[in-house]
Image (cartoon, rainbow, N blue to C red; front, side, top):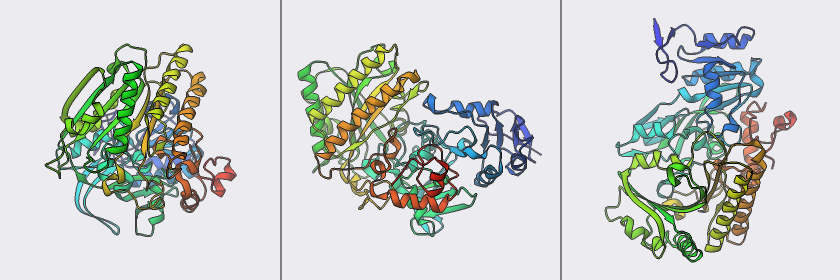
Amino acid sequence: MLCPLLPLVYSLLFVSCRAARVEGDCIRDDEALNILAKQLSPNSIISCKGQPLSIFSANRYWGKQYGKNASVVVFPTTTEDVSKAMKASKKSKCGNGLSFVSGAHAQTFASSTKGFQIDLSWMNQTKILHNVKVDDASIDTAIQYQSGATWEGVAKVTNNSGYTAIGARVGNVGVGGFSTGGGVGFLGGSYGFAVDRVRAFEVVLPDGRMVNATKTNKYSDLFWALQGGNGQFGAVTTFYQEAAAEPTQSQLGFFFIAPGKANKRKAYENIADFFTNHGKSGGDPFSLMYYDTGLFPPALQGNSTEPTDLIVALRFSNPNDPKQKSFNETFRGLLSGIDFTAQQISEVPFASATTYLLEPFFPYGSRRGFWGSRVTEVDADFIAKVTDVVAKSVSDLQATGESPVSHIYALQYQFPGLNGHQPKNDDDTAWPHAVTAHQTLFSPAWNRSSNDALVYHVNDMLNKITWDRQAQLDPPFVADYPNYMSPNVTARRLFGDNVDRLIQVKEKYDPDCRLHQGRTWATNACKKLGVASFFP
């Protein structure tokens, strides 16, 4: 009997059903890999360093600096395959650098390795399930998605179904890191973040055990840690997110702010007023806006090399409110009195907006950053200050001979209380977010490693402006968003008073510190290995 391989690369090839396909000869002198090849499902693949699929895995990272050439890459197709690969990695000659990768957008090197990598991209199925029971968790309607899926893939299943999941704002982002790192999406202000809606995780622990973690079963501590604590505790293979009612249409507007000191000041004042007052009486949780500044890709800005300021306004149809305010009613005050060099308002299907709207802002092919902190209130002076820093950083980067394809700062509005879906306490989830805060994002693209320090310094400056602003407000501290984790940021800055508990969970489920790529919790084993970087 012959079994067709998955269509990703080898759609026309067929292999014997007795064992996984092997690329290269790395299993020849590695007994653990030799045994694994016989245990894996027929459509799984083991790819040795330098072989086509190994190269594919190393090159698919959004930021060029994050890909590494692993000694071996395993492409499993089932949860059982992941379990067997985890066990094999402990005995394999390549097993010291164990990691697993989902969508390859990680910004901490956590998913890349020079050792043993498990690439989950072939485990990419999505289903809409009704009356779901996962251990002791009951879900009326769930979006079940495997860790190797992208949000574009999830949307293809949920589109026009009446249901949706809280997903990333760019379709090529993987579901795995997004869903364990906080999960802030377009509909976060309407339905809460992904970590607030996942009801169960299927997890393969570092010792190979396969478990289901829910809020109330015996793995409740693991469930809690995966609600924003990232993937240092095990490989999540399947998520069960409570489905939300799907908007049918989206209206989006791009408004390029005309230059001129007075005009820009008016824009900053209007933006600050929207951030302050939109969520008060009569505000629409399905409408939001971003202020973007910097250098945009040619698809958006043409061939201009000068920084540009942009307002992006979005309105998603509220399936439960037939009297929802129109786009013009919602954003009239925001746009009033501002001169624009160009503007466009479009109406598109919901799925198109959530998967393709922002992709042009974040192209592949460069060294990339995706970092930012949060703030509960902004004013015009704050917006002017970050705008000036970004503009200068564009010219500084260009002065080194770089021609960055993208260099963007974004200020992202968040609806108060997440429309009733926000946690009540900061320790309800691993990532503390019981206080509503607006998200900042600095996403530069550059090509020379010699400019890493310059870019990191700009990010530090932007974070300091945000942290200093928050220190003047109540509360004086809000945790940064884990998926926008800045280089060298402390664990406390991301997880507040939850750090000690997260270290305890890591100690329990990964006592040997087998998962230690990227930012690593300071357990005793991780400290002994010299890889700990997240300390109390």
